Amino acid sequence: MAESVVIMDESGEPNPYLLGVYAPVQDEITADELTVIGRIPADLNGVYLRNGPNARYPMKGRYHWFDGDGMVHAVHFENGRARYRNRWVRTRAFEAESAAGRSLWTGVMENPKANPFGNARGLPFKDTANTDLIFHRGRVLASWYLCGSPYGLDPLSLETLGADTFLDTLNGDMMAHPKVDERTGELFWFDYGPRPPYLRYGVVGAGGRVEHCVEVDLPGARLPHDMAITRHHAILMDLPLYQDLDAARQGRYKLTFDRELPARFGVIPRRGQAHEIRWFEAKPCYIYHVVNAWEEGDEITLDVCRVARPSPSGDGSPLARMVSYLKLDARMYRYRFDLRTGTTSEGYVDPDHNTEFPSIDARATGYPTRYAYNVSVADAATNLFDGLVRYDNVTGAKESYFYGPGVYGSEAPFAPRDGSTGEDDGYLVSFVTDEREGRSEVRILHAARISEGPIARVLLPRRVPLGFHATWVRAEQLRRTPR
Ligand SMILES: [Fe+2]
Image (tube, rainbow, N blue to C red; front, side):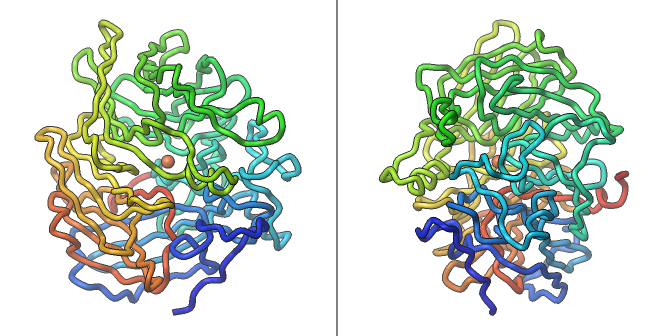
């Protein structure tokens, strides 16, 4: 098998996120004669898509894993067959660098002041659209963790449809993890930045326009990554991890975790005004990802993967600190917010296992869910997902599946089978990559019985580098939704 060209940065240090299972690939392919071990279920119909950083050109300055150009790898399942393709997201920055034939931006490890342009707020980093994917109104939106333009993609061809303006109603940017309520067709989002307003919260209506947007008052710039919705509310976060302003003034990017400050959760009616937000305080922490949230009477439940100590270790070199900060160390955790009393209760769902990148049945986002499907984070120097964990929050049962030595996976969304009647009536689908052989495949598991291992393995003609978030688009969504 042809191995990809190794893209290096200018630091002179070998960067683990440009090597081995992370090394970017340099071609875009389509493959439909794929070898299958086992049998692809005939009732698994839809598309598995995964986003991630894939540098096209050698980076100016040091490379941070989050800097790579967004590339989507996808497998379309139809009537027991599978088709693979991968495409870069054609962002404005990607097109500018393509025209120049080289890298024009520095990443977050370097002073960005000479970069050509940034996001709508003027943050001067390259909007790579490399972080998440979410299906809404007929297209998949590729998003960026520092807030950027959501780029529409055709879920089958992966053609970039352009920066999505929501029918010319989106002013500013959108964060990486907007939430879609499939029952109402609405999409909920925020954007944030280093200057006021530090946080804005908005709603795209079922017709595709931004119908609601309010500025949320925060004590300073924060780095919120995710949010939650419930039937009547949205939940925003003010967590005590933020950019060190003194370092920022010197052009350096440094994060500080303030253990003296509480974590705060802002519960706002879905179409509420800023003064209607109610803040619930909890122990200090950082949270990358929400599992789900829902209402039961006057109480809101919020399940998350919670990072108790978001601080870097390592030997102090910029690269070591970066690698250390990136290392996910989270536990499944539950908050309850009492809307009558304003009080918070909190505690571990699973205090032992480092799990992250949670997925649920997307049809139930914002409504009660019983199951969460998380990745197991390997005990390693870099971010590696060595298996999957299924949580049952009614019985407390936990079931695991590990890929095997040297084999690492991706986020594994729940893929309902045709006619699915429940949130575990379907499959989990994930790319896995074998670091020794440099090969990748897709593994398909019964969501209700993951410990039994894969029911099918689809061998891919190329290595899929490890990446960020994934989504599943159901066949019936492909057929019926307007674009
Ligand atoms: Fe994320």
